[in-house]
Image (cartoon, rainbow, N blue to C red; front, side, top):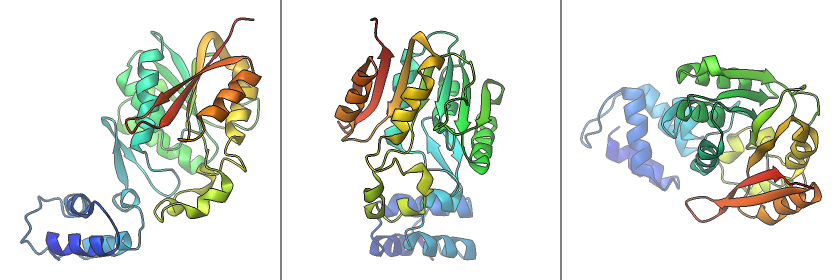
Length: 269
């Protein structure tokens, strides 16, 4: 199967960036460059193309993905790191004070915590995750990117109030499940292969935001901040949650111009 043939098959399956994906599959599976006239005689590559044509995520097929300047191991136990989340990392990178300690709730692959630790070598992170297999992926990614000495993985449920004990942080960061439950079945085919629990934010998509704000404001320094990834249409709702809890709220947009990150702080009474 040649590069051109792979492109054609991917394109026929509705995959828009078929050329880039064909190149990635060949480079990762056959460990080679991509001349268009070479016939790659690889059963593994053929199987990978067939799986991708069935809309199985490319990232799970090759077992890794790139986020910021780091590489992350990924599988069906975690969400695929997405460019949208880089907005959260960029905001946190500049807001965190010197020698900061932060918590990353619903860490998943660890892409937020690990990327921040990589960018800010003066920081430390507690990464909270409900599922043991997912937390193990995050720990492996911390090791893969050389930040394991400043990364503490903690198994816990962010919907419960006691998982952070009496720890106090400069920032509590989270990309929690925030998709409205009724919308999940309408998402693109690839997303439906990702863990449902990492997508489902309840009936209104706000269940985890409410719990984090109610449970962990006590774990935030007076001059600290919450930082959330949010859906493109959730800025107003997050602002209302903040006002109800006497918190300020600032919304940051992603590179596409959509609301993507919310910074919440304690306000003086």
